[in-house]
Image (tube, rainbow, N blue to C red; front, side, top):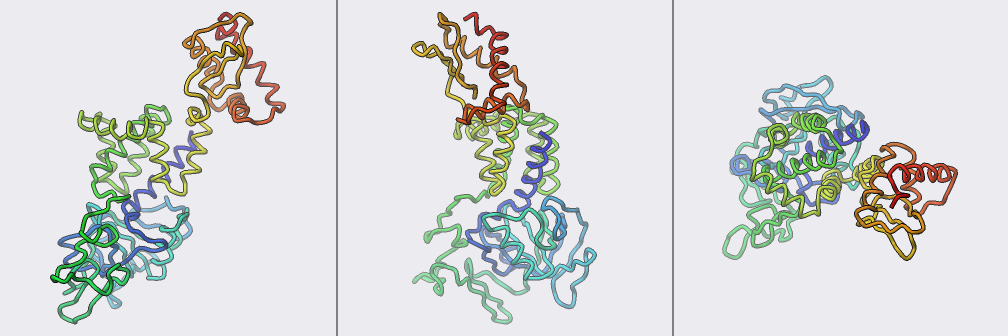
Length: 401
């Protein structure tokens, strides 16, 4: 259980450090555009932006080679990336480049060079994100990036500096080099990666509503409690760690755990959970969609604590009269009763549950029964577990049915 808690702690921190970043559709690296005053006044979800400095916000620093969940909080005021104004804010770390995105507030990755930015972010956007910091990295929550002076966003992907005349054009735009319709309107009012030609947003994996994210997180917390994977204190421990990085998401989720959900929140949780077929499926889906490359390892950990037994077992326990064999819902190998036994489905269900619970989670007997249930070949452990099953069946009243 400690391994599970530690692993989920790590993955959750990483997931919400990069919360919203997966909105960008890119195989290797996000599309990065300049950061203008227009973007500050009217933020657009979808593009990554390169600012000229930072002011305000909560900063965290990760050192190259350290585990990705290992970060330290840093107190900083305004700083810029201008060559003659750069300064060391952390020993041996001079912020020189930033890549920022907006998702209810500004979040930024800050690096000492553009090469580091490309190296680190390419890894984040790969199929198997890194488990350690590939470069020194500073990131911030609720930041205020500093825009380039005199730079204006004319359309999504098209910028112009009205003093120098400098222009930036997103060459990946499907209509490039055309940015305007015949009527002179912008072809894309929003970044093309989240908009169709008629400017209807394609939500897909983009979560742009923090209230929705809170419901999804609180539903996960609720299911972990109901399925007894976590205790209430463990839920709070994990969420408090997450709140150090993303307070706007985790603080409301913590409040729901501590004070209970409102009727409206319960209704929304019920909808989310029921839509996926119940708590177990919700937990599995949440892990697969938020933990990405770590989801397979997480499922193995859950499998070890018996969470996935419902996937191994049968829809229900029953007695096959023709064969005289008991088939359990739990992953217990089939077994016979007395010659004249004729138990009801309810009696069989009670018997199977009793036998299964005679072997606590973590004991070798359960592991062996699961292995045999999956079709594994008998071995010495099988010879050891069968008599134990027989004793459990006797204690549970199986021979009296």
